[in-house]
Amino acid sequence: MLSLLLAGALAAQPTLIDAGPLKLELHTSYTAVLFHVVDQASQWSPFCHRAYRDGLEPLDAEDVALLAKHAALRKQRGWDGLNPVMYSDGTLEEALAKGVATGVLTPEQADAERHLLAHFRPRIDTLLAAKAPNLDEGVARLVARTKDLKAFAERASRFAMNASARVRFYLLPSPGPGAGGGYNGGVLTVELSKGDDPFGVLVHEAWHALVRTRDDTLNATVKQTPGLDYESLSEGMAYAVWGDNLVAAVRQDLQTKAAFDQPYVRFRRLGLALRPLLKAALDDPNQNLLTFLPQARDVFLAVRELSLGLDAAEKPR
Image 1 (cartoon, one colour):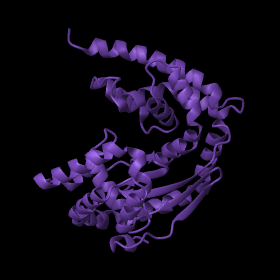
Image 2 (tube, one colour; image 1 turned 135 degrees about the vertical axis):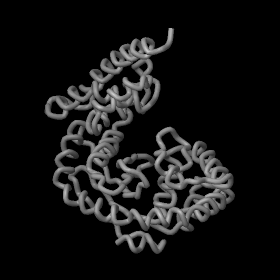
Image 3 (cartoon, one colour; image 1 turned 90 degrees about the vertical axis):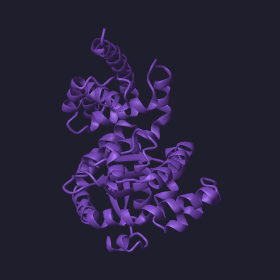
């Protein structure tokens, strides 16, 4: 399957993973790989994964300038702007043409993206050649666990008032250890390095895909809760559902004196506090998102106050 990617050709036909209320169209796409690597390497968002920039090093002045130009465009367009266009099964030219046709890119911006991706393509091809077997392995692992994913999706769907979703899902090579992922612009991504098990990351992102169909409900809670933002509520619940080594991660945050105002610190700390309540809600047919969110609001307020005290105690007097 991945020989097509190495040749820079069209992606292989997607594999449908039918997990009941969650339908995943699993893709492996050369165009998506090109975009994902430079997008993450540009570090335009605090949620970009540093391993991709490290994987392109050493960077010269031209490299840095090109990545900075992409970062400026990305900040202007946001997560939902380019994702539906550039995570594509078509060729790079087809993706860029669609971006221009839909107004996501100007012709000048499309030219700049074309130059950027051509510039880094030899290094990305080297990465893909080394990591392609990991993607094949990841596909096999996920298909083998369809039954487990369906069981999770059915519980999450019931909790989210019978939510359902059909999602484009891309498996992507990662230069470093540790699987990562995201769900933005209707596109779900999971990153893989050698030996990674993608299931946990997929569950985390699949939770987003289902629960975000109830964004109006989440946003109502955010508006009623001082200091709470949508991202923290959404990620806090997702970490509560599946946060790998969550206790150890929170312990490490405390040992390194990482403050609550740092996004990942906030997500992990809230997720750990929400975990027993969310597990009970998922197991209880009489609970759902509407009954759970008032509890989540109270937990956030308590965790925030506790964190203010912890952070203040760590500051030099």
